[in-house]
Structures are given as structure tokens and as C-alpha cells.
Length: 258
Image 1 (tube, rainbow, N blue to C red):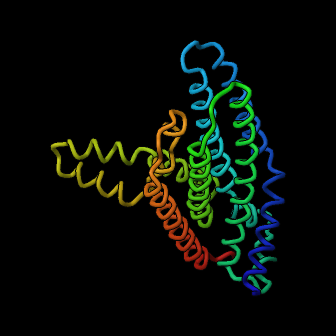
Image 2 (cartoon, rainbow, N blue to C red):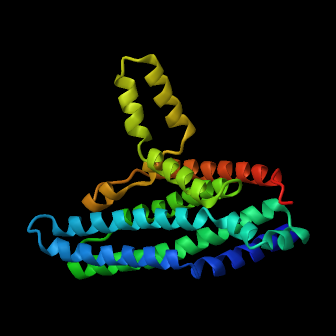
Image 3 (cartoon, rainbow, N blue to C red):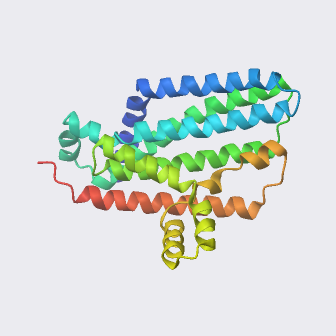
């Protein structure tokens, strides 16, 4: 119970710190602006206006959500070290695992609240434009929430041992490659070089397949999203979150703040 209480307290403090971040509101503003702009752009086209609106809007939600996760997440631990509050926190009966878990959950809660705001704007823009909404859109947005939780997990890992700049570079690299693992693997399979095939194989195995959470195409075009694939994406996302956080805890446990 003491461990859980510490997690809740740290998560609440992280929430309060995150919602005061200027970067967060700047990125949220641009996300909402792009969603509103997509409605205007859709009116300029005579073909598939509703699909253009929803495609651009969902892309904006995914991109700016990930940007917020990375820019805020990479400083989760460093801010406490820089302000020297880490010594006060760890001098109390607070386990380092509770500190990492609380930081992670606090930022995920903040991101999901922002995602809810962006989703409401997306729904409002779609209704105003007469674009259809169905379960596929809800599934697509739900998987965006899982993707953001994964992004926060590896941002937290890099924040546990690195500076914000390096952690940002690592996180951005994982995010970009994570959306290209399928393409890299497909290219590697057609390569005549055994080394290239081996490399792309292990890249696909070692890094999270973030494209598994991208269901924009199916949602926009009204295509079915198999429940098995959704379940697999949820299971894979959960496994990566747990894996990244376990490594983050082990790394943070070995860190000396003296």
C-alpha cells in the first residue's frame, strides 16, 4: 500500500508539472489548429472531402501527441535532478521503482487528457463537415492512446539515465524507426545481401512496431479492423511498456546522485 501511495502522489505531482508546461500547450495549439485547418482544406476539394478532413486530423493527433510525449517525457527525471528535488524525494521511504512508475503514469494521464481534447475537436470537425463516424474511428483513436503510452515508456527509459537532449534524440530515433520497421524488413527480404537481411530482421524484432497502432486508413475509408489484430496490438503495446519500464527501473536503481 505504501508503494502504491507513493506512485499516486508522484503521478499527481507529475500531472501538475506537466499541465504547466508551455511546450505542451504550444503543441496542443498547433494540433487543434491543424485539425481546424483540415476542415477548411477539405472544402477546397470536390473529391473525398470528408476523407481528407479525417486523414489530416488523425495524422495531426498522432504526430502532435507523440511530439508532446517525447518533448515532455525526456525531461521527466532530469527536471527533478536539476532542481535537486530528487534528493528530497528519495530521502523519504519512496522506492525508485515507485518514482519511475509515478512519473510514467502521471505523464500518460496528461497525454490521454490532451488526446481526449483533440478527439473531441476531431469529432466536432467531422460532424460539422458531415463526415461519417463509426467504431473504426474510436478504435483508431484508442490505438493512438496505446501508442502514446509506448512512446512515454521509452522516453522515460532514456530520461532515467541521459540528458534531455540525448534522450530526445534517442526517443525521436526510436519513434521514426518504429514506424519504418515493416518497410525496412520488406526491403531487407528482397536484398541480395545476407547481412542486410539479418540486420533488418533484428531491427524488426528489437524495436516496437509502432505502425501496428496506425489504423487511420481503415477508419477513414470505413474498412473493417479485425479484432484479432487489435488484440495483438494491445498485447504487443503492453509488453513493450512493461519491458521499457523494467529496464528504466533497473537503470535508475543503479544511478548515483551524489
